[in-house]
Length: 168
Image 1 (cartoon, helix red, strand yellow):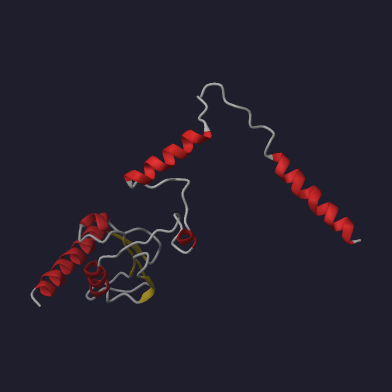
Image 2 (cartoon, rainbow, N blue to C red):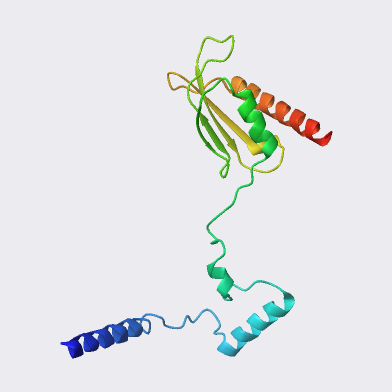
C-alpha cells in the first residue's frame, strides 16, 4: 500500500511540473532576453542601489506586505474632531485608519439630531486631509454648507491646538 502512495505522489509532482512546459511559446514580437542578461540587469540595479522586483531576502518574510498600507493620522485633526463633535455619542473610533463614527445626537441649541462620520486621511494639517459626512435622523445628507461649517470648525480648532502645542 505504501508503494501505491509513493507512485501517486511521484506522478502528481511530475504532472504538475510538466504543466508549466505547455502554452508558453515564445512571443515573436518581443525580443528574447538571455538569462545572462537578466543577471547583469540585477547586478546593475544592485550596484546603483535600486530595488529589484525579483530580489527578496529573508527579512521580506517578516516585514509588512506590499498590500498593507499604514495611514498616519494628524493628531491635531483627531483631537479637534473629538472636541468639536463632543455632543455626539461615539459609536466607533479607529485611529489606525483615521475614522470616527458617531451615533445620533442633537447639537446644543439645535432641534434636529445628526450623525457624523469623520475620515482623516493624511498626516498633514490641511483641509484635504479631513472629510466630514453628516446625516440627519431620517437618513438624508445635510446641507453641504453645514458640513463645510463643521469641517471649518474642526480645522480651526486643530490649528489652535497646534499653536498651543508650539508654545509649550
